[in-house]
Image (cartoon, rainbow, N blue to C red):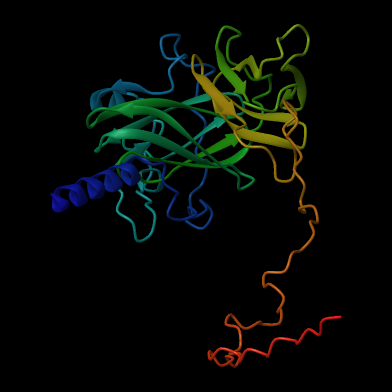
Length: 330
């Protein structure tokens, strides 16, 4: 019985660690160090198809990934070079903007298709290193079985971007260079393409929410009930920085929010040294009051004998009778 319980605990531990979001094993090498140059942005588009704009990840086929190759596109040696984390196996394959290319480019505000040959199954996480070195990771979907998947890259910052994903195993890196504006204002996602964000807190009521530096509202503000919940919408398929200001602290999150998806931000613990604003905590004395101290040992008193001393006993013989007095008659 003990062996069965121990085996069950071991299996739970293995599954928990296998499905938890992993940390990238290494920082990817820069494209400059690999001799990669930015290609012409010929495979980018102003927006994904309407049928794909609201999905973070969608099932596709290997034929679709290869069919995306432009007929006039030349594939260089560097664009198909498989760059994997050092010392780590990478069973999954990652391509952009078609298979088998791993290097692409686009203009700022444009989109590029990415193709994922997923060899495993389970939760799929994406990782993107921005030109300033920031790493943004997020959960995309649960992949029930090995398959081909498709997602879209959005050029929201100029410079080199490096991407990777994990699904029961790492993928190779792909590199995307984002050029500045192509002479006109980039096309943002359609206004109907929004992502929903729900901010909640069990204790920090009355907080304020900012997105990309702009005030959006908050709990108990502008008609919102003071209940610890606040819902807002942001343009989808874009990166945003959400800041929540509450009594005693600030919460910040930067990530890409995809169309049609719902994201939760929960402030679950009060900052150190602060009292939750929702209720006042009872104050207990830190020092007990002084009480008189009684002796733990009784004082010593003189000890008296418990037996009376022996008194000499008088003889028991009767006392001799004295002679009777004589009476002289008158």
